[in-house]
Length: 193
Image (cartoon, rainbow, N blue to C red; front, side, top):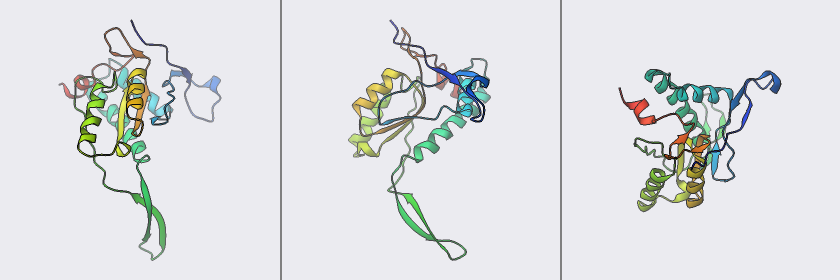
C-alpha cells in the first residue's frame, strides 16, 4: 500500500507574468514543521529538478544539475547558521558593521546508495552519531535534495531542535518504499560510470 498523494501544481515562471501565462509544474508539498525549510519553488529550481528527474538525462548532465541544486541548498543552509555582529574597517578606512558566523562550521556527508529521507533511517543514524559525539541538536543543520512526507515528518518530530533544508518534498513512497516520483538511485546516477 502506498502513502503517495499527488503533489500540488502551480504556474511557474517570471513573477511579472500572470499565472495564466506560466507553464504549470509540480511543486513541493507543504509541510507543517517549523524546523523544516523547503527551498522556494522557483523556475530555476523546478527546471533543475526536472533535469535530474528525467531518466534520459546523461550522467554528466545529472552531475552538473545535481551540483547546482546542492549549491542552492548549501547557500540556503548558510542562512540558517547563527551569526554575531562584527565590525570591520574597509580598505578605504570606513567602518562597516556586519556579521560573522558564530562558532565552527563542519560538513558531514552521508554516503549511501538510496535517498536519505525516504524513511529517515540513515539521516536519523547520522544525527544520533553527531549527538553521541557531543554536537548539540540545535547546532545540526540537515540538507537534502528530495524527501518523502513521512521521512521528513518522522525526522522533524524526532529531532525538533535541528533544522532541515530540502529542495523538494515528493509525493510519498510506493509499495517498495521508493520515493516517488523520485529521481532514481542518486548514488548510481551520480557515482556509477
